[in-house]
Image (cartoon, rainbow, N blue to C red):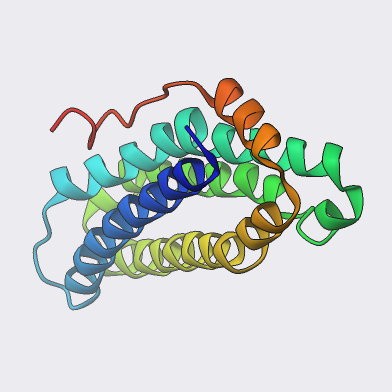
Length: 168
């Protein structure tokens, strides 16, 4: 895998995550209006965010960040807060999942509105994080890393697959 392939993989994964956020956002909009939603679909989307980003996607970005920091610490400083955002997103995903299981299924108007607000925060934070990676982190990596660096990143990343999309 060469430099463009690693970046293409990360950008494709962002596109998949964005698609899942779009699906969740649609269900949350329906819920906000007080209409019936597909709880199984919402639960599946939230479950996807509980597993895939932390187990597959974020570790790839973390490898890339560590390589960037090793090669050019000054460039890494520009994006140093992004890797810690992965942990924050994981905590928020767990909070959304817990809220769905513990409160949303009760079906009261108050819990529904609270869950809508929490889900909107989750969607916003994920979109903001990916935009920062696309606009700051990825360009810095492309600017700084050599082909040998990209080969090393690729070697460490390995063949981690997406359990949902790669099985289609």
